[in-house]
Each structure stands twice: as C-alpha cells, then as structure tokens.
Length: 498
Image 1: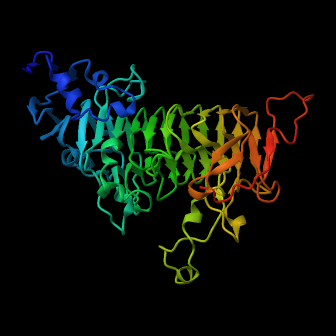
Image 2: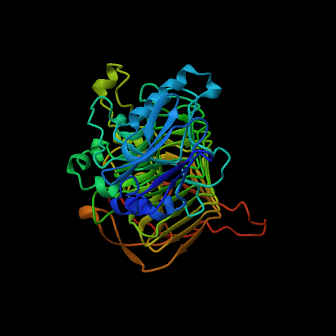
Image 3: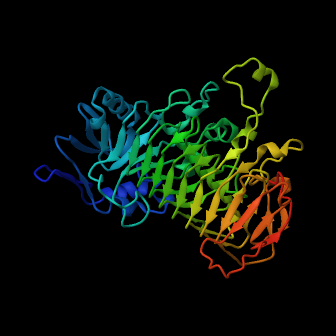
C-alpha cells in the first residue's frame, strides 16, 4: 500500500514505499522523462518537493497517478504532479502579474510536472517565469544527472491547439507575445517544456497539423526587445520546432544561453514528423551561447536573419536521430511569394517582395558540430538545397556572416554553400576545422531526390556567381600562405533536394 507523509515542520513532502514505482510504471506525469534521456527514477529519486512561504501542499493518488496540489500564486492551486490540467491556473497567475510593478512580475513555480492541455500565454511586458529556488543556479534543466529539478510543462497526450487560419502562431505549448503584439523584457529561467512526442505522434488528429498546419511546437516567441531564454530545456517537441524565436518581428537584444534543446521530432527516413531545435526568424544584437542542441530531426538550429549577433560556444550533437542539417542560415522570404496585385493595393498584410537575408555582423565562432553520420549536411549556408527558384534565384541569397574557429565532425557533408553571400558581403570562413571521415558518397536528399551523392568537407557550387566566399586566417602569422581553395573539395549543385 502506498503511504504519503507530509512533514509540515520542514515543509517537505516525501514519497514513501511504492509511490515512485507507481509514477514510473504508469507514466503519469513522468512518462516523457525517458524520452529526454532522463529516467523517471532520476526525476523522483530525491523523493522530495520543496515548498516555500505559505504554499499549500496536498497529495493524493487518483487514477494510478500521484496528484500534488500546490499554491503557485495567491489563491491559485494547481496540480504539480502531472495528473490534471495546470494551464488555466498558470495563465491566471501570469495575467495577474500585470497589476504589479515591473520589478515584481515573477511567477516562480515549484519544481514538478505541470500537465498542459491548452497554451500557456505570456501577454505582458517584464514577466519572468522560473522555478522556485533556482534563480542563482548554474545547471540546465534536464541536461544531465547534476541538473536541479525544474518546473516541467508537459504536453498532455491529446494536446493540440485547433487550427486557426487567422493566427496559426497560437499553436504551441507556450507562447510569448503574439504576431501583432510582441512583448518585451520577458525571461524564461530554469523552465522545461516536454512535448511528449512519443504519445502524441500516435494521434492522427494532432499530427495532421504538423508541417503546413503549424502544430506540434513547444515554445513560440513572437519577437520583442530584451527577451531571454536561460538554463531551460525544450525536449520531445512533436513537430515544427522546439523553440521558435522572433518569428513575427525582429528580436532585439535576445539572449538564448545555456539551454538544452533535444530529441525533437521523430526523424527521417523512419517518419515524416520532423522538428527543428531552435528556429529563429530575424534577430539583431542577439547572444546565443552555451547551449546544447541534440538530436532534432529537421534542422537543429536554423536562422533567417541575424545582424550584429553572436553564436558561440554551442554544441550540436547527434548521437541517435537523423536530421537534414545541423546548422543553417536560410532566407525565409522565399516561403512568402510576393503577389504583385496585393503589393499594389498597399495592404500591410501582403507578403513582401524577395530580399536577401541579412547576416552582416553575425559571428559564428568556437562552436562544436558533432554531426557524425546522422546529419546529411552539418553546416548549410543558404536556402538552395531546400528551395531553388528556376528564375530569380539571385534574389534569395544570404549576405554576410562570419564562421570562425568552429570544429565540424561529419561522416557525410561538412559545409555546403548554396545561395550564400554576395559580392559586397561574402560569407567569411576563418580558421574552421572540418574532420571528414567515412565514405566518399552518402545518401543525401529527401523523397525522390534522395540519392547517393559525393560528399566531402566543403561544397561550393558556382563561386563568384551563385555563392561568394572569402577565406581569412585571423590566427595566421604574416609568413603563412592562405590557400584560396581551403577545404573546397566539391562543386556540386545541390538544388531543391529536400
């Protein structure tokens, strides 16, 4: 028989006897921890939940699930055991923060599992969503066995926001701002999101909204100023992306630091339910550093524009799942075909005409890309392997961007440049090390375009025409000679192969 004791003097709730076994065996509240690389026993092995202040703690077993009711803000009690929907309570507390002074707008959730059946919405400036007691902690949620226990927002098995043609952006577990109203100075600190992909992928009513439907995402941030994602985790996203950032407006001075973004999507060629890890619209003066991106199944990190931005000291690692690319600079405007009639009407909702994706001032440095044999293209610069227009392709370039002192490990393709750079603002490659092992050919592409292709360190088709690359050697002595064709061992046109 399960027994639960509450020792009120120490304010600690302890699970005794078979409680941990019930959680592990039923999967309620902990079923997706296994998917993120942590066993359920790791999550509950401490057997304790710390309560603070005048928090209310009540635990009971219902439907073979251990429910733990705690007060998360004044008068609002939710289940932190992962048995019943916590979203309405969390949203109520977040909305109540707007009545406070900006410096007091913090919702610190007790560590635990919060079942999510509808979108969590941060709709006001100056909000911080965090885990109690971890404001000064330097470990990252869910990353390894030394990680402190965080508040985990866990998608319910049937979680799937309905299709809303007027606002597809709404479909995510957690939403920061909206397409028309981004918010500013919002921080997620030590918060984990678990998309429960293994159970949700079996539900056709949910998976039908993947791809063009825009469903399956964990986090979507619309764009704003000084928004931050710190020491957090986004794992097991069903499809789309684990973290969408600055997807509606340019994000100014964003900080994405020391996060764990992993195990997202099911993976090609076993399934067509794919997910990016981090998907960025456009940012300026952003800092993206210290993150671990692991085993996302579309592209681990894809960026559509980044000026005066630093992407440094990150790791992209693929020990298990397949993906199309590890890191990519793309051009989102190609997805929005301009309508001349619409543009003449001066309707602000009209898709803009094509323009080069701006990466001037972006420095990608001191990162490690361990793509191994699971990733087809480890680093992709330009959109042409995905979309290559028969006419007007020169309008869809990227411009600028510096890659410096990165290490790339691959058994397929190291770097592919397709639509990268302009004559005035070329892509700069400086001091990168590409370690290519394995066969000289590999299966590259998707669907009918997937076939055996030559692979190597650096593929640049049409230099000084389709692509503009500039080699530098900032660490070289004056006597060193810099080869103009450093690492360029291919010149194959990879156009619209994915």
